[in-house]
Length: 253
Image (cartoon, rainbow, N blue to C red):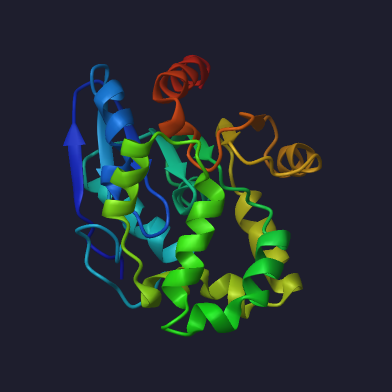
């Protein structure tokens, strides 16, 4: 059963759905909502177990995508433009791959090729599963991805809204932690090949020289951009540039 999500709608115009990253909430998109809502109807969701949405029994990406799909449908939106950051990038990709009417996807700093991420996550599995070390590991991970690229006030804002719930995080990462490499590759391949809409991936952390060709092979026409030196939050480091890029991309979707 799809979870009921907390969501907020701002502005009028063509609908855009924004999906946040792991341990965060729709509030993380505030600078983008401020800019987009002058021209668009912006729907911002809190994923299950995040923000003001209740926890659920499953955090599998298919179930998260189903919850987002149900929210979009409840608003009567067809052919939505989807934008997801980090975990949200996987979720909006899964929504598009499910066959739900999707006009386009923008994935912000979330590689869909998970080989290296799986190896790293499995190497640190015992620390993630230990309640005492879990917050230390998670905070170190966010510090590494963010660095000093965000200004102090924006970094403080994200840290204040972050919700490090071990059950939720391990639930989201269960498929990566518990799968064999072969099983994970097969699952990702099946999901990504289902995407048939215009697809833009914006990375602040370079996913590697092989990634653009890998993605384009599975999603014909997909575009990969690397914004050098901005880290895991390119949309928040330079929200004006990010919104300009969205509008450029949407002209052709």
